[in-house]
Image (cartoon, rainbow over all chains, first blue to last red; front, side, top):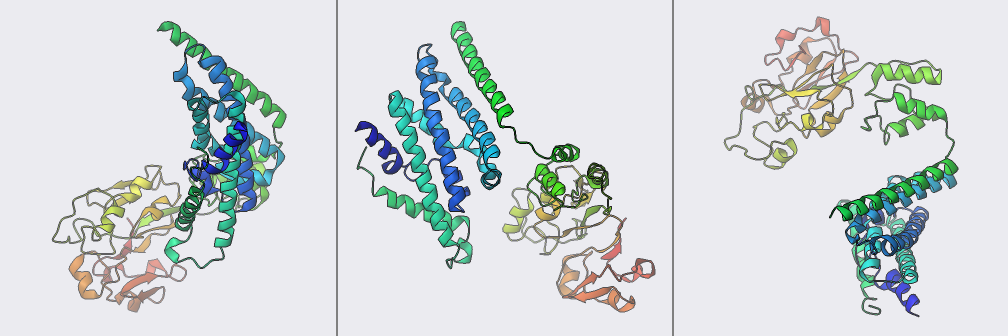
Length: 191
Length: 265
């Protein structure tokens, strides 16, 4: 029960993008098409789950016993950067069109604050190993959900009559704000 | 203290080593075979990733050249040398393009152009001056002298002269066109390097106002259009040269009172 709560808390109630405002860069950058947005979400989810596993292990097996907590940022970044490199190679091998569609935003997962935020939250909230995995999975699914909804809206938005100064990024940011407000309706359900 | 240092160093070193090893193995397993020509062409390109070719970077250009979507001389920065190298690699002929260089089409420096009564004090940048009441000069079309073009040039091919006008050092110029994009007055244009005659003014003011604001302006008298057989046209108080039909050798340059239309020296 606890695990399910953690999962839904991360995915919907405390959605990383829409209530913590982490990872806005790919959220705006790759939400042009549903297909590429969904793939971006999956790639981020993958990185998030593996990050939560590896960083938990590193933190509890190495950093805590040797009193090296001050190394957590450096070592977490190292983990994330290596994982993203791996995902990049993997996607390039599996799907060239997807690799081109994600473009610069794929290596930029490295600097996606949502992932570093996830690793630090897990430490901060003293989750156990399994809880950490569920939290990472929830956060990833939440990111996928948010970016896919956003892409769906933006695909419709292409056909809408948007005033000239609002075209492109401005209207996207406005939509993101309204979307965030909608997600605020969930706040307080699970803390 | 030293203990912590050593443990920290070993930990980070060890972690780095493990991840590096993992990535090295993954690289071997997941390597994508691509056309080796792309790598070779990428190596001969300048590697500045300036985007002057219209592609996202040098690698993207290389991919497109191999696909035949870009011409071998599509890299303006590399110029003739790079075009020849790429042509050799691909086994095709080069059609050599003449080098393009930026021309500053304004001669209204500090000595020629009159200033407004109020003095501009602020950051030395054209884009800022432009917002603050259009800068120091009375002329709304001329060079502001803020040096945005010089800041934009990655190859130090532009310098500001004593008269507060930018000058192009042709040998250093790589034809990337970034200065022309940076110019907020749009007075920098890219022209073939062998083109030497220009109208060095962009002012559309009427003759009276032109004379008031700058001594080097095209005052819109139209004498150039009347005396030359063809090639010069007056458009909105400004002489415009049609380079396809203009013949510089027979043109009487001394007829232009303000020397707005003249040879580049």
